[in-house]
Amino acid sequence: MTATDTSTSTGSVPRLPEVDPKGMRVIWLLLIAAFVAILNETTMSIAIPHLNVDLGVPPELGQWLTSAFMLTMAVVIPTTGFLLQRLTTRQAFVLAMSLFTAGTLLCLVAPGFEVLLVGRIVQAAGTAVTMPLLMTTVMTVVPGHARGRIMGRVGIVISLAPAIGPTLAGVLLDVANWRWIFGVVLPIALVALVIGVKLLTNLGETSHAPLDVLSVILSALAFGGIVFGLSQMGGGSHGAEGTAAMSPAVATGILAGAVVMLGLFVWRQIALQRVDDALLDLRVFTSRNFTMAIVVMGILSLAMFGTFTALPLYMQNVAGLTATESGLVVLPGAIMMGVLGPFIGRIYDARGPRILLIPGTVLVAGVMAFYATLTEATPVWALVVAQVTMSIGMAMSFTPLFSASLGSLRPRLYSHGSAVLNTLQQVAGAAGVAVLITTMASVSASQQEAGVAELAAGAAGARAAFLFSAIVAVVAVVAAFFVRKPDEPAEGFHGGH
Image (cartoon, rainbow, N blue to C red):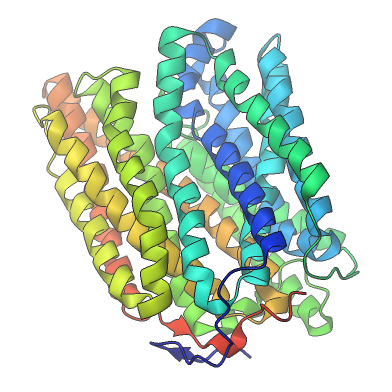
């Protein structure tokens, strides 16, 4: 079964002074790879308007540079539970970074839209393997008493890269052109790949479970369809232009079909896991602690990705800031998150999740409530303070959630738990973007039809979108009370070698 939930550590695992040096070296390499991959993922929201002009493509076509990325992530991530059992650590890392590096190179030299789109898809395939590999490795090699500290660094990657990405893209687009976005990322990816090939050691053990092709097909149709349908309802993934590629009725039909495929996928996994052949083992949900933790994670991901998309639109279209200025607004919060990560990890190791998670979710909900009061005259300094506050709340939330969720599972389910967690983040992120952008656009349009000035109408749309986030964030606050620190006997430190 699963770990028994307790509020404090039992101390039954020997308290090792340091993580195994070889394992720590692998984790550092994976942290760098994950940071670069996520940084790349989040630069496109600002770059797409420039790409539309430079490549001569309409907005509804240009948005596919992010829609295709998210779709590929949604299709590949559910298979990583299987992949990480079949491949060694070294093989999985080389596969992920080779795909990402090749895709980045394609994007850099792309002569036109078609090659650039292919490059983004190849990039996404590599990115999809990187994060589950990182979290599974942490759970395998880090003893329970030190996981919070290491997961604090993972939390930095998850939260810092999306905050820096738009800032970096804005600066590069203002001083150079869109190719430099990939030009900056490529050498870092190459160095990480070369170091990994030379120095990476294998951790844990592999298994030879057969691949169920039907599960892969159902997974692709289910998760890919959900993300695609949500992105279209939101006017395109990270809809910089807010232009939908299809009608809401068609998008709703795609979502409905995807939900049916999801039901079939779940049915298939339940049947296969009886003989331990499931593509994605759903027995992770038999842990109440895991389930509660990923519910909170999903809500926070919805709020975070939705905000990272909607807030720049408000700042540029209503507040009148440039792309670079919009990026700089979120930068202090990103820096604060990076500074706090290790300290928050140590607090988790010593005191458990609640002392961090409950106030962290309250801060996030409070900032969402503040954003629900935005006007066209809201001062920039208030936005900076709000973003710093939200970043602190996110930092206090992500580390406990990563540690408590995966720590509640048996070691052989770590890879499946990581796959579930990362899939949920993609789907929740797509939902956040879809709901917030759709709400912003529809409320703003109705206000303008009623004779309200354009800027005031845009502010009204932003308020409505963030009000939805504030209401949903309250659910995360309530659920945070039910997340506990797992008993250390469930840890996989010894079983991972």
